[in-house]
Image (cartoon, rainbow, N blue to C red; front, side):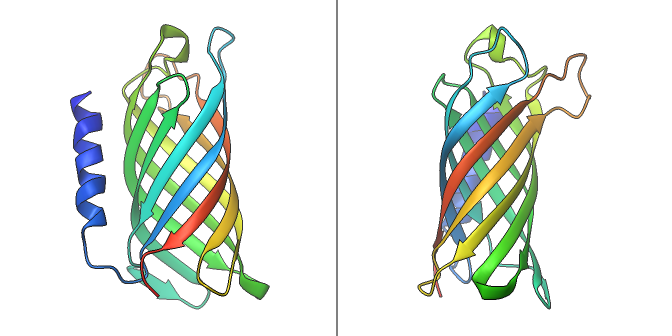
Length: 165
């Protein structure tokens, strides 16, 4: 639980940094755990994406942080890297990898360890005002670093809110 608190503090600290092409995404979706004994549930996701540290053509890369809370009480907090490829007509593809801490609320939702990695792939559309909507598929697992690695998949509808323009 200490790791989750530290990651949540890091997310809060990152959000107080100067705003320049930063973005917050709010997501609502559903998670499907791979174990039969697990309780699938709705998920709320909050991601913070910092100013890109690399931009070349249509590709940009930036650091980010994510927090996911399941309806069942399971919590994931992670930090990592996100990449975006801008397509034609304001469409984009986003991907991210965020290692972090996971706390299950019940034994059936145990993912094998407190260390989990969330990988995400999203397709979205940006509007004239800078806001965007995307549909994301994400997967959390411990990458076989523990004895068990059941994993969980989530599908979320996300609302992207720029912190500056």
